[in-house]
Image (cartoon, rainbow, N blue to C red):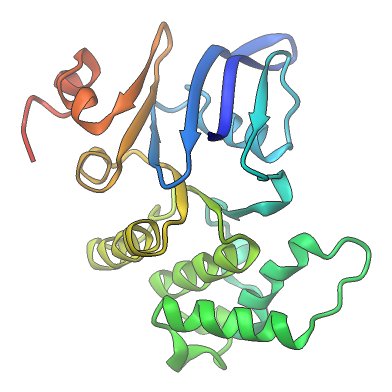
Length: 235
């Protein structure tokens, strides 16, 4: 059963379609990379899945007990986000608020969940440090742990390595892949990194201005989109 199924999904701004008649599905254990040129609607699609943007056509269905509250989300980095005045543990634990409704009080279980996520992401040594004093790579790993706290089923990452150096990007991708392959967490990532898409991800959704591609990584490499953007190289 699909965790997420989009059928003829259309998303619009001011009456102009940004996403038009898009159909694809995400199953448990998938690692889906959403690609496309700037302005193709990638972030708009994520907003639709998260319930921040209502479809103007088609539908988004959730299965296997998944709800929008069960989705962990790592948004694009902002200056305000980078200067957040809290400890790493506090930032990670805030991911638990997603499911608390009107009673935003942490429990012993919440703290244990946060500590486990921190350990899993290999950032135990910085758990008590101020988030604003961390490097960009450390901040992203903390936010990934936060997303993990919010959900043990599905995490969505929007350009998670934007602004990071090559080493920090590689370390973050390695952590995400481990969560997917070793912990069975389903991942949707928005990225311009074609090499990441074809080496780490199991499926690719490439949104174009006229048409779209959705399929396995192998199918993508051999498609017209893959030949154009990957240049026919094999991994």
